[in-house]
Amino acid sequence: LRGERDDDIAITREGWSVFATALCDTSSVNNTYLSNHNIQELWHVRHEYDEDFDIHIDESVVLNVRLNKQHPEYVAKCKILMNHAHLDMTPLFRWGLKFLPLAVSWFERAHPCTTLSIIVEAQTEVEVSSEEEFQSRILTSIFEFVRGMPKKVLERRNELALVAAYDEKISRLREDAEERDRKITQ
Image 1 (cartoon, rainbow, N blue to C red):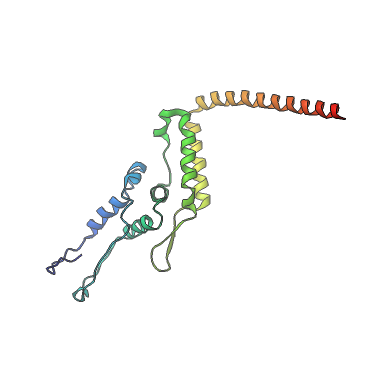
Image 2 (image 1 turned 135 degrees about the horizontal axis):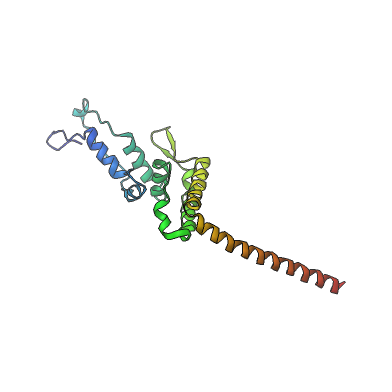
C-alpha cells in the first residue's frame, strides 16, 4: 500500500467500499453470485516508516476474503445466504413448477453453510446461517412457489391424488396376494 518511492498509495474508505462491492455485490442475488470469490488474501508489508500509516480495511472486505479462503466450495451460496434474507422466487415462475425441484436442490447443496463459521480474527468467528433460519428460507421459498402458481399446483395435486389412489390400490392388491399366498402355504 506504499509505492517504492515512499509515495502513499492509501486506499480510501470509498476505495474499500468499491473493493467490498467487487467481493460481494449485494444489489441482487445474481450480482452476489457473480461477485469475486477468488481473492483469498490481502497483503500489506509494513516498513519502519509506516508507524503513522494506519490501514482501515472495511470489515466486509476482511469477512469476504476469509470466506473465499476458508470455504471456497461454498462461498457463492454462503454469500447469498448471508446477504439476502429473502430470496425472491418470482423470476423463476416463468419455468413453472419444473423449477421447484431445482430450487429445493440448491438449498440442499447450500445446507453446509449452516454449519460453517468464518474465523475473522484470532478468536472471532462469524456464523454464516443458523439451521432454523435456513429451514425457514426453504419453507418460505416453497410457499412462494405455491402461492405464485395456485392453478398449476392444484392441477398437479389432482394428478398426485390420482397417483396416490393407484398406489393405494396396488398396495391393497399386494397385501391381498400375500394373504392368499400365506393361506395356500398353510
